[in-house]
Length: 277
Image (cartoon, rainbow, N blue to C red; front, side, top):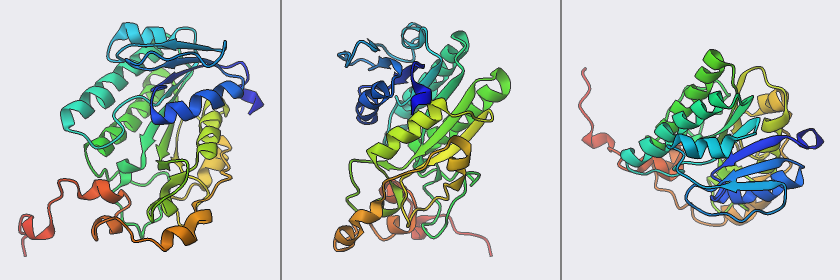
């Protein structure tokens, strides 16, 4: 990814699980990195990294993170299903503050960590294109749909390029049946983010964040054309081991792409309002 060498990039959520994977890989690609750890005091990994702290709902904290950068990789926020007030503060209020900071600092692009859970109520029998309709499986997935629309709006209204990464299961390796369709290996994660930082884009694009999984729920051919992403890892390498295990999902969750998220606070058919005849 030599085209990323020397680029000045901000990484929010640098203290999180995905941030910990990305920091050394972005630095190894020659990026000059500003890493925001939220309330966590990070230690710089090299002379090419500056670290910041602060609540991203606060404009001053946003300014410290974005100072002197040209692209933001936004990985901060609530990353699992949580009560709505927490999701609103971390994934809506803070995201709006980040985009307003991108305007103030004239950033060229925001790479936004969206999620497969913005589409989680689609059937596992469906294979989704990038223009598939949102079908969020909870408050978290709903916030990611809202975030994608914010990225679209900031391109249309303010000319800030956007790449939405609909991240699947970003893990060192797949461990259960659903991961055969949703896994995103760490090497592919790094490639996906680096391509999203450096590749030319036509304003705003959304791509699926998954490895080269034959059982994938998502048609990601457009990602190669849009940003040059060509995954090299595959969950199928672990298929024999995983298929020998019991699927941990309940019967309904097995039928929906969002897996276990889909049946949290779920109303079974018997408890739903009666439909007219």
